[in-house]
Amino acid sequence: MTSETIQFPSTSGPMLAGVLEIPEGEVRGWGVFSHGLTLGKDSPAASRISKALAASGIGMLRFDNLGLGDSGGDWADSSFSLKVADTVAATRVMAERGTPASLLVGHSFGGAAVLAAGPQCPDVRAVATVGAPYEPKHAEYNFDHIVDLVMAQGEAEWRIGGRELTLRRGFIEDLRRTDLDDVIERLGKPLLILHAPDDDMVPITNAQEIFFAARHPRSFVDLDGAGHFLTGKGQAARAARIIAGWADSYLQG
Image (cartoon, rainbow, N blue to C red; front, side, top):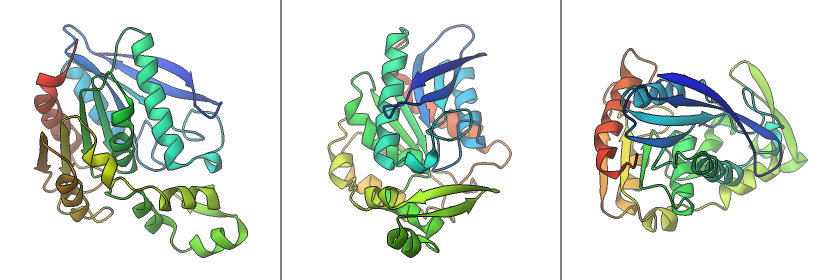
């Protein structure tokens, strides 16, 4: 397996930084990974799942969203809608380089994003979520202590993961007006839902809601003991094995 650095423009303008994990030997297909709210392409779930999928023959592009990691721009200008648009843009990049993405994988907030992006990606044949919220506005629990301040002042500083980000009213308003129920029902692609019953960030009831909103073919796998971030030994690789086996009949080389 080799890694290739990729840059492509966000739909909002700034350049986004990505890493393409390229399988050695036979390539079974290609995919795009969407990371969690502020986690980035090098977070354990994004990096480990993408690398494990590549080791199984599925090349994966993982990239930093606006203002995170190695990408340009300001996270304060981001939104759920922009994350979805940039996920779609990433699939176009894959198609342009001759490696069209048949698979979308999203972790946490990124799981909600791939559900919304899926119908807009003609090459994508299957979608998998890991610890995804049923409603993007679930993300508010991360910053509920400053929501009132943001809505009153227009923005406020939000400290998370040892850094400070600017949270703006537009981000919250975008979350609140996004309803994925109809989107999930109209996804029109096979869906795999992975979720841990011990997930204390996004309760497993979210997986149930997604499953019941979706149409067949749909599958649910319980990641018992994995937690939300899949940082335990072998948990990300376990998730990748499940995704790789399930996606096999939907991939295109």
